[in-house]
Length: 145
Image 1 (cartoon, rainbow, N blue to C red):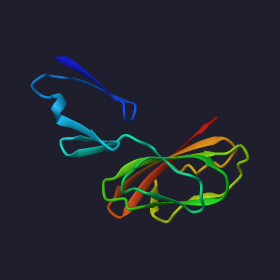
Image 2: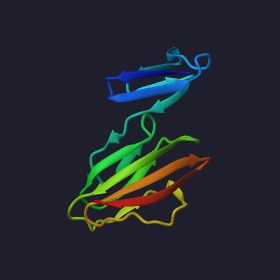
Image 3: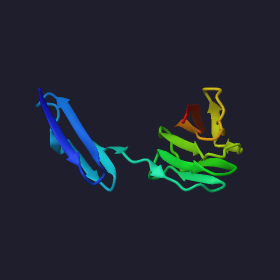
Image 4: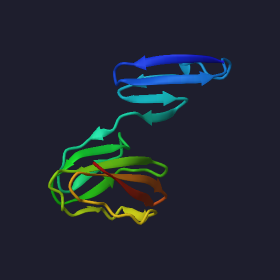
C-alpha cells in the first residue's frame, strides 16, 4: 500500500489516493480547467457561482453544481442541457429579507423528498438532482443559518 498526496493549487483541491501500487498510479489522472479526468470519467470539482436573476437559468453543460449565495427576489430555477445520468447540487441561500416565491421549472419532474423550497430569511436550500431518461428527479433540504 502507498499514499500519494498531490495538491492542485489551481483550484485549491487536495487529492489523496490510498491504493495498491499495481492498481493506481499518478498518471491515471490529469487536471485541466477545473476538471479532473480519471480513465475518461470527468469529475467537476467546482461549484459554479451564479448571480441572482429571474428566471435563474443553470446550464449543466460545463457544471453540475451551482450556488446562488443571495436570492433577493422571486424566481424560477431552470436547469438546461442536462443529459441522462447527470447529477448535481443546487444551493440557494435566501437573503436576510426572505419571503420570496422560488419555484422549480417544469423540467424538475419527480420530487422524491416532498420538501418545498423554504424562502424564510437566511435559509440555505439544497436541491439534489439527477437526470433519469426524460425526468429530473430531485430532493430539497434546508439548513437554517
